[in-house]
Image (tube, rainbow, N blue to C red; front, side, top):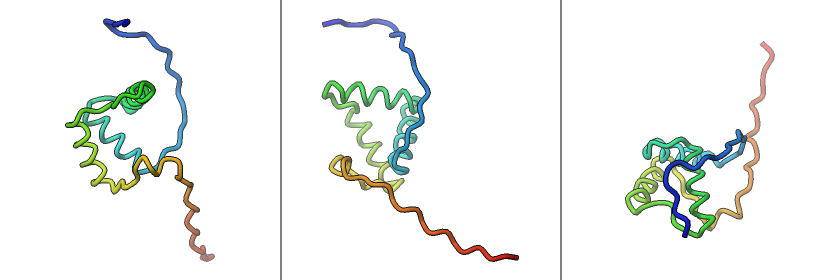
Length: 97
């Protein structure tokens, strides 16, 4: 097994991604709680999941549960392949002044 010590240099790129609003709120809250940037949190989650490993301790999972309640996130992993974009709300009729 290759054990690394010290920092691992990487090349990061700026990206624009769209996320479900409540998922983003929970992720931002968790990143703040863990004193990480949102990008660092997502990199860690992805690297763990790429190897089939759980990214969070029991304590962190409890915090995630708290944040899910605060932000009303009821979606689960079962929903992940069934998410669709909600139709935009109709705009109110504007009246000439």
